[in-house]
Amino acid sequence: THVVGRVHAGGTLCRVVSTDTPDGKVVEFQGTREALRRGEPAWVNYVKGVVAQYIDDIPSPGASFDIAVSSDVPLGGGLSSSAALEMAVAGFLEVGYGLRVDPKTRALRGQKCEHDFAGVPCGIMDQMISSCGQKGHALLIDCIPPFETTPVPLVDSSVAFVVANSNVKHQLDGSEYPTRVRECKAAAAVIRKRFADASNTEGEARLRGATMGELLACQDALSPLEFKRARHVISEDMRTLDAVEAFRRRDYATAGRLMIESHNSLRDDFGVSTVELDALVEIATSVDGVYGARMTGGGFGGGTVTLGRADR
Image 1 (cartoon, rainbow, N blue to C red):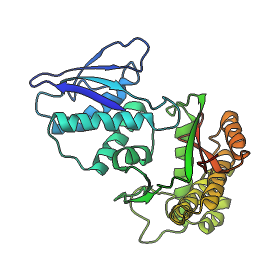
Image 2: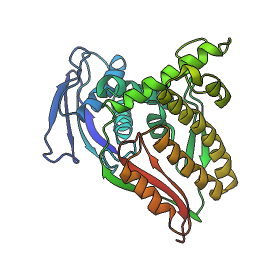
Image 3: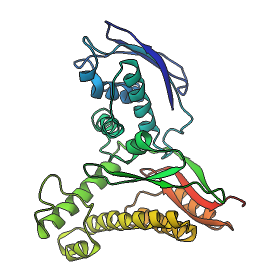
C-alpha cells in the first residue's frame, strides 16, 4: 500500500483519494481533534483514525494535507489491508511532519485507530507485521507488553507460499468477531481467578500464558463455546512456537502439518472459517508437493495461505 502527497502548513483541511474506489472521489475532512469523527466513506475512517493518533505530535492548528492512496492488497481478503493502509498513512505523517516514532508505537497507534474509528476490537498482529516486518522473514510476536518481536528467516528457494482469495469479503466490525473477543476474555477471567498468582493479577485477563491443563481444570466453569474458543487460542500459541522451530530447521513437513491443524482449530473451535475457505484448504492439501494450508486473517471470508514445494 502506497501513500503519496504533501502537507500544508497553517491549515486543517485534509483531502484524500484512492485509486481503489470505483468513483475516484476526493474526500475532505478537517484535521483537528474536535472534528475527527467516524463517517462515510468507511475506508476514510482508517485515515482519520491514524491522524487522530498523531494529532498531539502535529503543530497547531492541526493536520492538513493532500494524499493519494494506491494498494494491491485485496480488500477484505484476510491480508491485513486495513493495517497496511494505517501504517502507510502513519509513515506519510511521520515524513511529512518530521516525526520520529518507533515501529512498535506506530503499530499500537494503528491498533487504536482500528478500535476507535473502525469499531474492530482487533489485536496487534496485523499492525505489528506491517510496521516491524522484514523482507524474507516471518515475525514472531508476543502480544502482551512490551510486545517483543523476533524475525524468523523464511528465505528458501525450494519452497513457496501461495495465497488464494476466496472472494468472500469479510467485515470484522460485525457481531461475530467482537463476540469471539468477549468469549476469550470471559475464559481468561475464569482461568486467572482460579489460578491467580503474583504474575497474572494485574491488567486485563489474557489467554496468553494460560496452559491447556489450566483450561481443562476450569472447563466446568465455562460455557461450551468459551471452552472451545480458549482451546483454540491456547493450542494456537503452542502451534506458533512449534512452527517457528520447524521453519528454523526447514522442517516443512512439520510446519505444513501445523498449518493444517491450525485451520482445523479455526474451523472447529474458533468457528471463523467458511465453506469456501475449507474448500480451498482441501483442494490445496490434495495437491502433490503441498505441505500444508490454512485460512488467514480474521475469518468469515478472506483467503488461504498454502506452503508447498516451489518446483510443483
